Length: 157
Image (cartoon, rainbow, N blue to C red; front, side, top):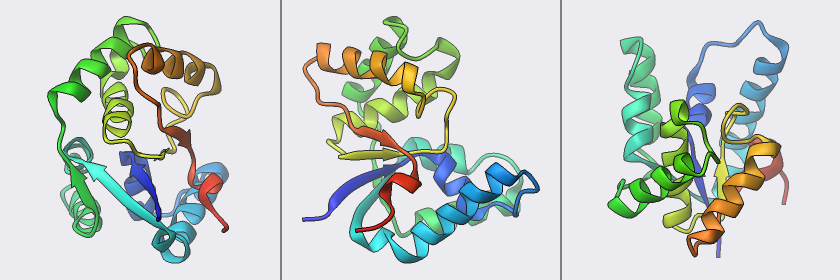
């Protein structure tokens, strides 16, 4: 059985963005493209209605590129259970209030029992200090958190 991976919006954005002049961002974009072309078939991949909403923002042409990528991905609904867990993550200061959408990505991935949540968001999601608080808050609510990771961690066998 393939592992289930929730793709947060930054993955879709890096996949479709113009190549960056920033060496770190460019490296993440290349990793994303490599994973998409050569490794995604090893996983069952999902996004959510929230990802669709976020992907549709901004430049119309780029938004359409992001939305086109999402057409081939399972889209998860954003239910009340995920909304409630996101509110708890913010209330427990596992995720800052200004990043409530990031808390919702984490909650959706958790509620939908995704093994992995893939992201390039190092500020509020793939942040080692915050992950401890996130995992503690999720487990305190009786759920098992998804493993938060970058696509670099999902390369290989």
